[in-house]
Image (tube, rainbow, N blue to C red; front, side, top):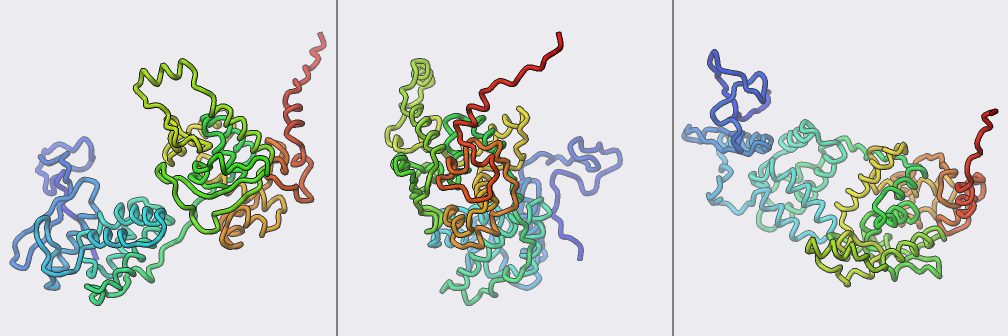
Length: 447
């Protein structure tokens, strides 16, 4: 069966001899519509044989193919055509695009899950299949949809997540009292896609220390919260001064920040009271000294010249704030992390190019496991729901470069070092600093 194609308005299908080649697309001849926004045209003939068409944006070729396929199939089978813009549907069955919004509005999962489903459904499913009645697509069409995503360069783990969101939506549609009885079942169930796995960047202490040194000083505590406490990115951004029980050497994890606002944590297991080591306490106290220091006259003058608003006092309770005194956003953290990574690589510390903030949490898990900490203790420290998640999802074999660690094991993690660790893991921070300050001996030149 030939692959279905749509009409390309940018190029001539039957060029004449002597027509010049398109400068942007070698091998093709530009038409008079070349460069227009709506490049792709879906074409079909209605039941009366009249030519019909609809144009799609230049980056919506997959959507144009799906729309053309659905219209032609509807004509062949004598079904109702997908309505054009402005036309009304005669049945109560919504389109996939319409049901996506209903599904997301009625979903009772946590906010993060609904947002993720919305990103996958609106970003990938709606452009390709949104105009189709939700009762119409069958398994072969969904298979073709996933194949098209792969052809566009989407990686297998991402495709699997799109499938998960689509399957959840179709399952919910089966229970709809208006049209659920018309659904042909969940046509996505049973479609097997390669799961794939995110390639974890295996960090070492030399990488973590370099990232902490190179990142914006206001964000340094975020690196240590990820590598020493196993906090997720927005959990780190949500740490409050009242959560840091420095005298008790404890830290509470009670909330995260989402788009700057306080939000519940990922799961019930995410709420915890964690031990903290003297190294983190030292970093925290130094950070808060700088955080509470009044801005210099130059900074005040600069902010006034730029017309920036005064720093809001409502966020004074957060340990870490962004440039404008507001909670750290995910985008700002990702940007700062990327800049720190490139700065570290520029000075010769080859932090893996694929490393993300999430890899700091994986690094901590791997260090604890490699150090011989009992698996159940690691599970509690990582706040995982199951032991399998600790060992399978995050744990990987790691040879820890303790000689590059910023402090001893106990100073870093707040509990005694397990037996069997190398001597380098037991060296206190003070001794490390003293040794690093000793100048290297100068060789005798013989003169």
